[in-house]
Image (tube, rainbow, N blue to C red; front, side, top):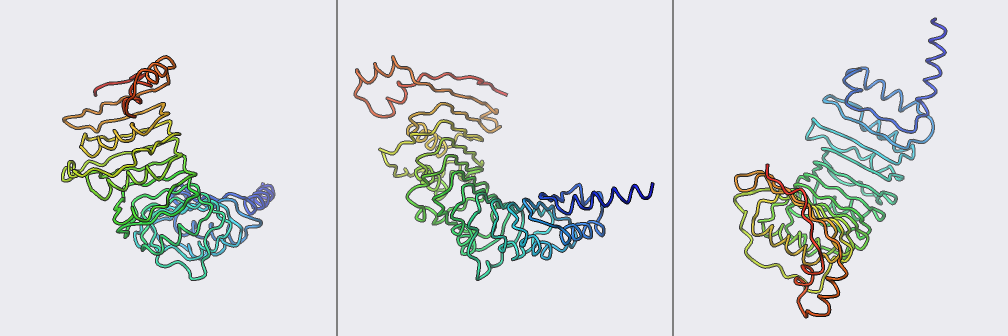
Length: 344
């Protein structure tokens, strides 16, 4: 029996030493404990043979050899790295992460980014970057983002320490920004257009703030080829009707490819209604528009999905008989079917 177990152990040892995907999640640490866990990870990494495709690590609430592990991982040609920290708000991201030259996907949660290495030349192959609760300064953030020339997906949530930020990545196809918009001077830093972007998601927006209000309009105007737009608002009684000024919009600008719009957590503020009106006015091929009102005394979670489709007879009639503005044309060139309207 002992001999058989020895053979089995040797077989599995050879197997996990050549695995292309290594994942040490929360369940792993709960099962093996502090002392054994660090030892197991170290043994697997330091005896690993061959390249790594993916390294995923949940960071436990006690000391581990993170810097040493990343130093080894950086020499394996790793393509995907996911690091999840839930406990230590002051955990500094080891600089070895910037030595992973073959990275294609990087996901980081709750780290302090002190300074980028002086010799950091960027992630030439990075396609997807997701950053949650990252603390860093404006220069490092700008340098990191701008040195990812092939980046197609960028997700930013709860950034810390940025009074404003710069997005200058024309290659983006999908952008998600959630719960940290403090736009400041971001408007004047926009490129002319994100010509590759097909999906834009902006979450938990305090649209009553003038800087955020103008940021959202500029962002929409910078994405002429998006097919999907998702927006959610953040209720703030202090600024719910603060926006009084009009945004200077290009009357000729249209979203000629936008098919789906989802706007949620609507409070009914003037700023929100102006934005919704603007999006509908410039969306000339829109097929679906889903909206949701926030639970409150005034709006009890009402939901609606509006489906649009062209009607040839109506189109011909309007084109022949009406010399009208764009809003009138949009209203008459589309049949509207409202489904699922309900109060909770």
